[in-house]
Image 1 (tube, one colour):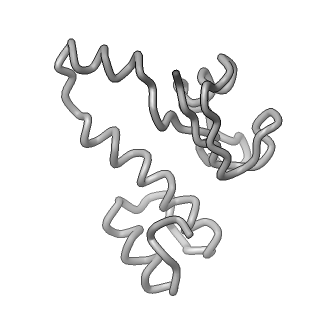
Image 2: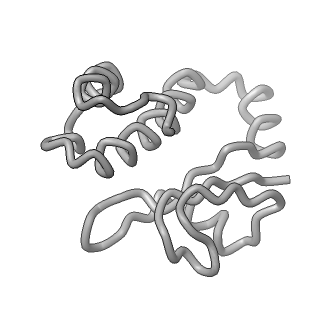
Length: 111
């Protein structure tokens, strides 16, 4: 089963914040290819859980799993930073985003 989190409004019939369990192939492909909005450059969707992918990474011993976890968190923080109109958020790393959001009075947990 593949679970996808939609990060922007109007991705097919889904909107920002939707968690789609057993996502359809088209939505999975958007997340896998890291498709971005042409106008804003914002990532459209991310894979939250993929049973098949997890098994493959375990068998192959693929490194970078922490980086993959951080990528999802980074994308969520960028979405929060965009809502808070934080200048330069697209070029910030995880720690910089957390600090900028905190300074702007926002919550770093995406709420």
